[in-house]
Length: 187
Ligand SMILES: Nc1ncnc2c1ncn2[C@@H]1O[C@H](COP(=O)(O)OP(=O)(O)OP(=O)(O)O)[C@@H](O)[C@H]1O
Ligand SMILES: [Mg+2]
Image (cartoon, rainbow, N blue to C red; front, side, top):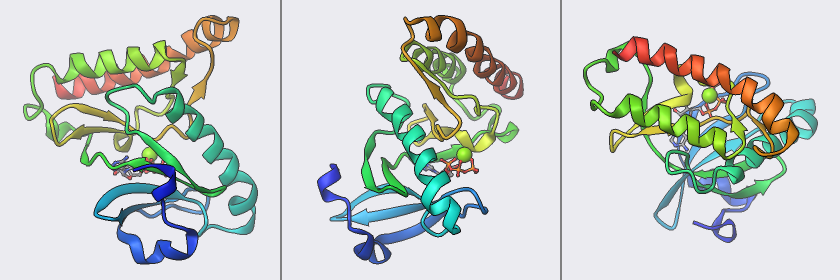
C-alpha cells in the first residue's frame, strides 16, 4: 500500500471495517480500513473539536509520523503508509494481543529477549518511545513476535549527535524500565 492508494477523505467512510479505538477529546480515532482488499490502520483526529482538528492533532501527527519514518526499517514496528491529510495518517495493520499478565506462559521463550532487542534497536535508530508501560502500546503479533506501536509521545533525534548522546540516551532508560515491568509480569 502506498500513499497514492490511500482513499480521499470523501471515500473514507465507505472503507471503514472497524473502529479499533475510539479516542477521547484529545486523541485520534483509530480505524481499520480496507481499500482494494488491502487492510491498513488510520489514526484520525478529524472527529475531534476545532482546536484538536486544526492545531494539536496536526502537530501530534507530524511528531508521530516522524518517529514511524525513522523506524521504517525496524522489523517490529508497522510500516508508515502515508498521510491522508493534516489530521490523519495510515499504517500497516499488524494485529496482535495487548500486553497483560494473562500472556504469562503463552508467549514464546524468546519473546522477552526479542522485545528487549526491539527496544534497543529503536533507540539505535534515534527514537525513544516514552509510553511503553501502557499495555496497549506493545502487542504480541499473530506470529508471536512483539509489535511496538503508538509513537505519539516519542522523541526523535540523531542518535550520534549531542542531543542523542545526552538526552535520548537518558530518556531511553524510561523505555528500559517499561521493559522491566513487562519482563516481571511475563516471567
Ligand atoms: N498498526 C496497527 N496494527 C494493529 N492494531 C493497531 C495498530 N495501531 C493501533 N492499533 C490498535 O489501536 C489501538 C490504539 O492505537 P494507538 O495506541 O496508536 O492510539 P492511541 O490514541 O494512543 O490509543 P491509547 O490512548 O489507547 O494508547 C492499539 O492499542 C491497537 O489495539
Ligand atoms: Mg496507545
